[in-house]
Amino acid sequence: MPRLILSMDGLVLKEMPLERERTTIGRKPHNDIQIDNLAISGEHAAIVTILNDAFLEDLNSTNGTYVNGQPVKKHVLQNNDVVELGKYRIKFVADQAGAQSEQDEAVVFGSTTAGVSGEAPAPSGLPAANAAPVGSIGMIQILSGTHAGRTLELSKSLTTLGKPGTQVAVITRRPHGYFITHVEGTVFPVVNGHPLDAQAHRLNDHDIIEIAGVKMEFFSQALQA
Amino acid sequence: MASHVGQVRLRNEDRVACDAGRGLAVLADGMGGHAGGAEAALMAVAAWMERMEQGASTGVLHEEDLREAFSLANCRVRSAAAGDPGLRGMGTTLVGACFRGDGTLLYAHVGDSRLYQLRDGVLRSLTRDHSVLRAQWDAGMIDADSPGTALLRGLLTRAVGVDEQVEPDVAVLGLEPEDIYLLCSDGLTDMVTDSGIAEVLATLGVNPPLAAEHLIDLANDRGGMDNVSVIVVSSCAATRLGTELG
Image 1 (cartoon, one colour):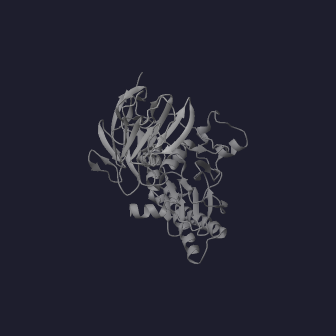
Image 2: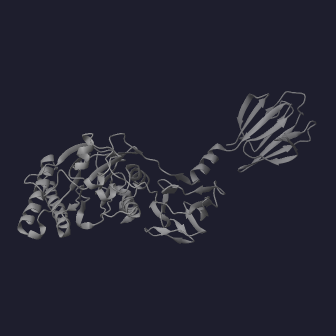
C-alpha cells in the first residue's frame, strides 16, 4: 500500500498509509489529513487512488499545491514525489509490496566470485592467459521489465542471468565467442523465438534472448585500444 | 541426513565411473605411454568399482572396503603388466569417493588426481598430490617462481600398479546439503586455476553436467594437451536435476 509522509522543515510529523479511495487534505477537521495552518485552505487538495495509481488534485486552494517544485492542478503521483502545501511537504512512497513483487520479477544478475581457501596452493605453472575473445566485448541490453534499458558488459568468463530456483541461464565467454546455456529451471531460454535445448548456443550480434520473461539483446562492442 | 550422488558428467569414459545409486565416483589417470596408461586406468576404475559395489551390497561401506578396492586395483594392474611386455611399467592415479547414506563422505586417492570440495563458496582441495613437485614444494625446496618445475610435472611419488602394495590416503568428512564435489585429473588443474574452478562450481554447480562440461571447455580453451577427466557431484541438486534432465 502506498504511504504518505508528512513533514515540515525536514521534520517528519506523520506517516500514514494511503488506504482510502479518496484522501482529503486541508485545514478543516473533517479532512483525512488535517493541517492546522493558515497557509492551508479549508479543503486544500485530495488524492484519489484507483487501482495502483494515485491522482493528486488541487481543490482550488488559495496558495496552491506544488509537486517537486511545480504548481499542479492534477497530477499522477510517482514514487518519491514530494507534494508541497505551504511549508508542509508530503512525500508519496509507492506501494512497497508492489515494489517488492516487481523486484522478484526482475532479472537477477550474478557473476559469482568464489573464494579459494587459504591453504597452501598446489604448485602449478598455470598459463596466465585470459581466455576471452580478442578485440571486442559482448554486451547485453535489457529490453523489457524493471531493468529495461540497462546494459551489462559480459567481461567475466561466466555471467548468469535469470531467477535462481526458477530459470537461470549462463553466458560463457570463450576465445571463439559467447555461448548461452541453460542452467536450471523447467523453462529453457529462448533465442530469436526458438527455445534452446541443453546444448550451448553460440550468440550472434543482435540475438534476442528471453529469460524468465525478460527480453534482452546481445551485441558486441569493439574494445578501446 | 540422507545424501545422494547428484548428476555426474563423465568424459573419457574409460577413466571415470559413477554409481549414483550407491553414491560412488571414481576417476583414474593412467601413465606409462602407449596403450599402458589407458589400460591401467581402465582396469583400476573397474576393479575399484567392482570391490566397492560388492561391499555396498552387503551393507555400509567402510574404510576397509575402500583400502581393499585400491589393493584390488593395484593387483589387477600389476598382474596385467606382468603378463604383457607391451604393458610393462604402466600405472595410474586413482581417486575414489563414496557418498554414504549417513551423510558422510569416505574418500581416498593415490597420485595427482584430486578431490575438491566447494562449500560456502570456498574451494578446498581435499587431497594432497603424491607428486615429486608437491613433495619438493612441501619441503620448501621450490616456490611458484622456481624454474624447471615443468620437468617435474607428472612425476608421481605414489601410483597404482607400481609397487606390490599401494597405500591410499583415506579420509572421512561430513557432507553438507549444499556441497559440491569435483574429482579431476591433472589435465584440468594444470590448465585452470583453483579460483577458476571455484567460479565454475559456484555458478554452475546446480547443474553438474554443465559444470563438468564447462570445466573441460575451459581446460581445452587454454590449450589443454592432456586428457581431461572430471566428475562433478552435487548432493543438493540430485532430485531436481533428476527430473529435469531425465
